[in-house]
Image 1 (cartoon, rainbow, N blue to C red):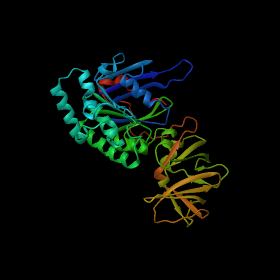
Image 2 (spheres, rainbow, N blue to C red):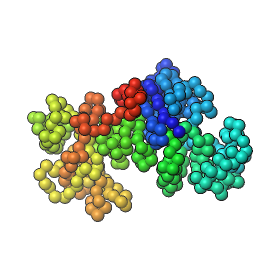
Image 3 (tube, rainbow, N blue to C red):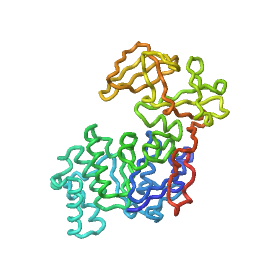
Image 4 (cartoon, rainbow, N blue to C red):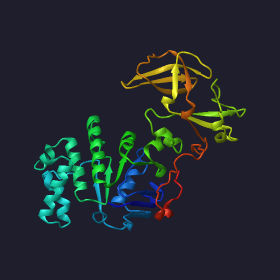
Length: 385
């Protein structure tokens, strides 16, 4: 196991294109589990492939355990990689699939058998060792895939969307298994995923990427509760945060143009508003209370969508041209066309600069540093936007 440091890591495929990965600064502590999270094309898989040695680096550095590995062959980097597709050798039994790379590295038969048996017990696949991949289910294949990556005892374990091919139940089972394995083995682990729930459940910290740039790198709850910008706020959360443009009226109220919406600017956020004339207001669906009774400051609306999901009910309310999503208890019953009133919980409000998309903060949020190690201060550059 070792720490992984990416310093101004950049990948450009052709001069005509923008960077697939743009000056990425990221530090993963020894034994830490991080997730690279973002939409398709954001650069997360390219980053993983550069760490693995499957993609060349345009500029920047990759260090594993303080060793520069930019020009090392993949087999010499000390990484284990589990792909989205299982890539098992069909003619070989599971035991031989696990042993293949160990034999390539010149280990003796006794040591190979010991390691294979050990990893098979850890991942609970002992009964599969004498079977060929064609006889395995999807979940079993992914367990074997991960066992093959781990049997080499890598310094860094890289997981490239390992659960995306599985059905919902298997994803939950293997997600729990991955969490358990990490708690026991403490491999330095990087997982690439576009599934926010997967990232939140597994990772110690989440690196959110978009268009090749790092947007935010922090603990799951910090990223969720204090998004660095409008993109992060809109990407995390299901349903996503409600975000709409507002204007500052007479320095005392936030209003939605051409509507009756008016939210008093409380002293706690007055400093954030400053002299701005426009802002974007964001609030999570569960920060909005829905009622059929009008109270002071309530916003009127009409129910247009109702989604009964068992553990919660999601309600879409139309207010003028704005669609506002709210999450309410399943015991509350609404139907499309019903007039309702909305109250916003002030503690759940987020304010964003309409030009930059940055979330306005009083400085009490987490530092959001790419890396926290006094010995590596030179890579603590501000997070790219």
